[in-house]
Length: 275
Image (cartoon, one colour):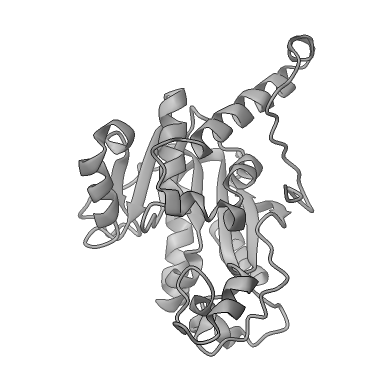
């Protein structure tokens, strides 16, 4: 298991003695949270190929660090193929929570719609919303979310320019309740590297993401090295997509890139001030 944080810590508690739970309500809540997350990660509805990538993505530790609870209203931004949705949907269902999937309306939700059609019992309750929202399609209601999560997406917003990235963070801030959490996992560019690489490599500097978040009104609550990978040299001609799972170089040096594994990633936790 990776260390959970270098600024703020979180612990997955799989089992806590009953006596301890009676005397420590916080421990009891942490145990329940850990058990619920562990069950969602172990859900039999998950795709085997996705489960195989847990060794790179540490989903249980990551969700515990962000403080996700079964009864929360959670927003997953740009879910793509639904790697995290396969965990978040059972987690929300287990505790009577609500899961939103928010992405570009015309293309970003198609694969999730396919999951809903194929397995309504698991994914049918997931609510769909447009993000960033332009006003014509359903949105995540302002002030409704306990947690907003984005996994390896900020670089995509950055490709559309700094103004669009700022707009995305502003919309995230609006959808969260006061005291709510924004969890960000993103490919990490070295702080010493040229910032221009953010516009094409798929990597972002921690300082850049923190600046966008703070400009929107967020406060940094913690950092974690859960998703760090010191073997990632971040100097590939074809950017982060050189590494798994994309392997953009095809068979060229495939074994080398597979051995490196998935990218070095920052894990940042922000909060919307309570007042």
